[in-house]
Image 1 (cartoon, one colour):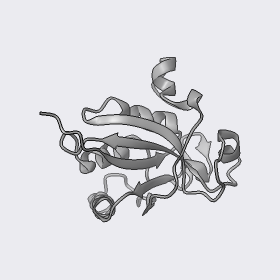
Image 2 (image 1 turned 135 degrees about the horizontal axis):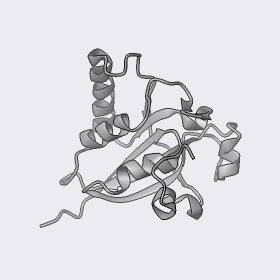
Image 3 (image 1 turned 90 degrees about the vertical axis):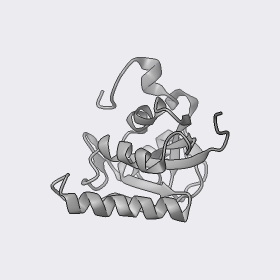
Amino acid sequence: MESRATETATFGGGCFWGVEEAFRTIRGVRKTTVGYMGGTTPDPTYEMVCTGRTGHAEVVQVEFDPDQVEYQALLAIFFSHHDPTTLNRQGPDVGEQYRSVIFVHSPAQEEKARRMILDLNQSGRFGRPIRTTVIQASQFYPAEEYHQQYLARHGRSGCNL
């Protein structure tokens, strides 16, 4: 029997199209929504966030069934799909809106995220210190409809278009 309980995870790791695509088809992920979090401007638009003046990060909010996919597995996917060692940059995308960030929704998520960062730093996997920040989730603003599942709808596999 399948569980009906879901949890929420929110990740920012550069262009939200690519971050969403990394999670969209994972077994146990019920829904992905791209949007904005972590800023001070209410109801930001894509154009506003792109200025770098709202404080928001481009993020994907992931609703998942913890009986089918653990938060720890989602963290592993997050760290394998972007460079967590750069500050406010992913590939050609530069600015605070492209920062590496984990917005946590519970003390358990915070503990797991911080532990994974510590373990990854100690392992030397990335060759440089991880710059990913871990902060309490705040107001989530869904992005405009044309951004939702953008790569899946347009047949592209990455954001470096």
